[in-house]
Amino acid sequence: MRRFGRSLFVLLSCTSLLVSGCGGGGGSTGSTAPPPTPTPTPTPTPTLTALTNQPPVGLDLAMLLTDGSVMVQANPTGTPGGPSAADFYKLTPDASGNYAAGTWTRLASPPAGYAPYASGEAVLADGRVLFVGGEYNQDDYRLPFGPTALTNMSAIYDPVADRWTMIPPPPGTPYIGDVPSAVLPNGRFIFGSKLNRSMWSLDPATLTWTALAGTGKNDVFAEEGFTLLPGGSVLTIDLTTKPQSEHYVPARDAWVQDGPTAVTLTSPTGSPGGLTYGPAPVQTVGGITYGPGPTGTYFPPGEIGPAILRPDGSVFATGASVSGPAHTAIYRPGANPDAAGTWTVGPDFPAADDADDAPAALLPSGNVLVAGASGALYEFDGTNFRITVAAPAGGNGGVPVFLLPLPSGQVLVLTPSLNILARVYNPLGTPLGGWAPTITNAPTNVVRGQSYTLTGTQLNGLSEAAAVGDELTSATNYPLVRLTNNATGHVFYARTHDHSSMGVATGNLPVTTHFDVPANAETGQATLVVVANGIASLPVTVTVG
Image (cartoon, rainbow, N blue to C red):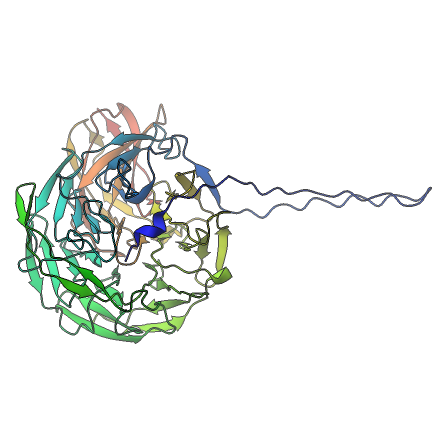
């Protein structure tokens, strides 16, 4: 549950780490001065680069579009005239593909009446963007919830037309709220209900909902997160029947028990008396009628951190805590979808930090970048969990952060409560060769404004690569096509769409995508690569006409 109070703005003065050296002093008269101590070579560390053009407002959600640009949502302040959850912008990299030097443009807002905050989101296989539900709506952030909260409204955004279309709610579902969600390998979007054990699947082609049985689920889906696994199963960690875990097998429409996590990853509830909601009014938004909805009481079970699938097939799951340090655990799937996975203990968060409603991102090196609730950044390399960026001074113990992997291999870091709103994280390390997408069939001549087909393996990457627990989902498991003109070095992303699979770690399975050559692409010889999770394939040569 995203509490609005965690997004209060605080001011931070930028500080730098200064390294000074001390020379040796002389001894008594006539003594020989000792030779100077060699200055040690600094150990390389990841760095942060502030965007040259800062966004017009603080941002709290970012999604990588299939044309290489980034769609972002304003961090709402809840104050009259302030940024609204209905405000969306786009970051476009410069001509060299540099996101730190990129520019911002305003995007269309959803139809009046739908301004979701803490919703479920996904970039679909056709390149459109889906927003489902919302813990808050219409910039009403009161607790207990106002009548328009836990909304059952949903909408789909078309980046090409810059247009939103409202979607009818699942039948008989008056509330959705912030829900765990994922896109399955077949392209269908699924979510689990915040208030009960029901599951729903959306067909992106018809925008119609289908109820799923989801047999064997332990508890309601409140505050849980979904992690897509190789083979198409979906892992979740229970917060109501803690510390249990389970994974969903789409082929059987059933859950398989994975047993208790090795350590506690969930915090206790902050509202033992529950939070009332409703009654939801009847509202017509974008031509779709929603409501009415009954009153009720929601009993939040606590919080948990994000869980990220790593290239070795394990999942690094992070915990929340009210009195640190928070724990982490490592999950390894069973030998087949029907087999239970196993859990082992991971390292604790340093400095009594935790990952309550915090984000994580997979780096090209295979390390997992995690933002603590303090605003500090950490990397997990499979064994060690170390701090790479200290918590901001003056953060008062809580600094909201959002992380999004970029096709450059960097990570976009959004800090809406600081005076530097957006930066890029420059990680160290490189991927192993076997992690990259491969191109097996691509055109050698393309024409601006035309669409083409490309086939290869691992085009979707090895992981969704981004997570924030139960909301603000920003998975990047889809291929991007990047063209670089040989003469100028200018970079152009061709919008991809209609991928044959949305699975992760698909191995030798051939995957096909379609790409549209930009009308403004420069003509002449160019290199073409496919990028997934920030890792590029080997280039092929194409001629752009």
